[in-house]
Amino acid sequence: MNAPLQIWHPFTNRALDPAPLRVRKAEGVYLYTDDGRRLIDAISSWWVNLHGHGHPAIVEAIAAQAAKVDHVLLAGFTHPAAEELAARLRAFLPAPLTHIFFSDDGSTAVEVALKMAVQYWKNTGRPEKKEIVALDHAYHGDTAGAMSVGAESDFTEGFRSMLFPVHRVHSAYCFRCPVGNTRAECDIDCTGKLRHLLEEKHGQIAAVIVEPLLQGAGGMIVHPVEFLQRVRRLCSEYGVLLIADEVLTGFGRCGKMFACEIAGVVPDLLCLSKGLTGGVLPMGATICTTEIQEAFAGPGRTFYHGHSYTGNPIAAAAGAASLGIFESEPVFERIGTIAEIHRQRLDAIRNHPAVGDVRSIGTMAAVELRASDPGYSSRLRPILYRFFLDAGVLLRPLGNIIYILPPYVITSEELHSVHDCVTDALRVCLG
Ligand SMILES: Cc1ncc(COP(=O)(O)O)c(C=O)c1O
Image (cartoon, rainbow, N blue to C red):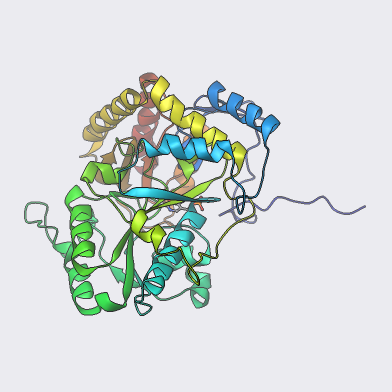
């Protein structure tokens, strides 16, 4: 008999990492494992889950849709589920963003945006505008194009030969200000590098891609809103498209439906995934302006990109149901409560000797620990991960950066217990 087919787990080294925990049930904010544990999912299962696991409205929508149209290709066909999702999403989007292109996940949403940006300029008679600008500390996914615009890291090191070159400019990482300013002196001078680049090379540049207000995997770096506003202004001034990767920040994570909304910024291309289906089924989407879409109409202008499961009806039904929950339940009140607890609890540990910086935005709270080996590979990561699991909380520190990003249905009591656990970790692990 053949050996059993083993599951190869992402970002996991079989020889170094502990065996995976087997989850047999997920309900609300809890994961129940085979070995009898109940864990608080304090990172929303990789930042996807919005309304708690197993929300009945989403479960019912999925079952009902599966019985109607399970899947059909989206080229040459359409279906009510995709249309309903688009219609519901429309209500939350700024007026200029009028066309949605579906894909499978966050990485493909980014790939689509990059390809659309480059082909937009080709289709409008400016084929030389094909280069991309990205930020330091960026993370946009693990496919080759998405990795190219991501910052160099352990994640990309082995694949450098496969990646296309991009222009790299400063991120507004205020704790480690790239231009050496203090907050008091700050005039968003970190955008100076982008300004110079655009002054010199705007004729070759197709787009700037950013994670608006919050860079996630690069270290939960919160930007001042003025940074995003300045980037938008520079893109407009120099005739370069702005791609907002809201794969993480979308659907209320930062306090409003979209992070761009907080800054009053409208991107030319918007990438969505993760919370798009409430965090239940994979789906990506890239949303663009009428001007961009119009450039793809007519002979020789087709956008040749698509995936087998593009616009999957069951995922779309989950997405429509999730957006329905924003209307039927006090989702933004919950988000506000989470944000307030985050602020209070971070304030209380701000001056702890182990803490370098605390930052929060909306439902995300992060603690950057002082470490002799900062970064994703910090020796603190496995120690803290294990500590939190033993305490019944799923938190996956990004090296020396602990962050909390819970489903919105977490109660105040549960959230305080997660923060208690983070405070304990400062004491127990770091003295
Ligand atoms: C900002 C951002 N963009 C893109 C991605 C990639 O999404 P996915 O893992 O669904 O491919 C992620 C994933 O964490 C992300 O945080």
